[in-house]
Length: 188
Image (cartoon, rainbow, N blue to C red; front, side, top):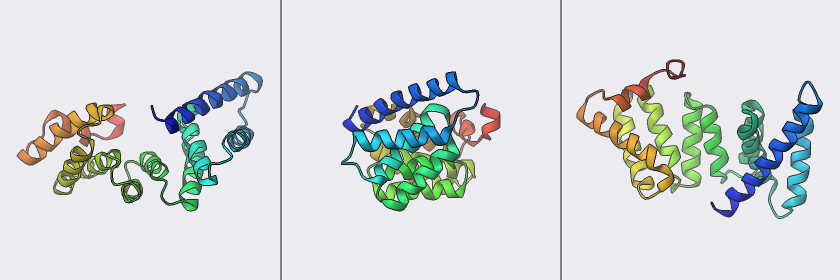
């Protein structure tokens, strides 16, 4: 776990504690109040971080704690408006909009900001497979595998990407490719 991940994990823990406290003491959670306190506490704890980095952290915390996608989107968009190089904010916007062209374009922005970040390549290939654009998915899976191959955290996705890529190259519909093509409703 790198320093950024550790810091975010600490804030997610603090944020989840604040959220739990809010739930115990109020019937309805006041997210505006929680966001205000989170932003204030982040600024105090990390005065050297830019406003864009703080917005990215708030967006991440909102996604992790209670799937506040709409609120997280606001913070991620603000983060990339302030600093378009924040690849993780672009990536999270892509995940929030994963089955849309908009999500695909957010993944492209993440790659433009950090070509060595493997995850967006996978999800772009996923999007292409979902839309039966197999020829466009192949080079994306290949690039994903090139970038992610030695990343232990990506081992599960690497295995799936290899299986799907083999299916695509062979022109067959294997299990992994079929799973990728299913609408989200069927998987849930």
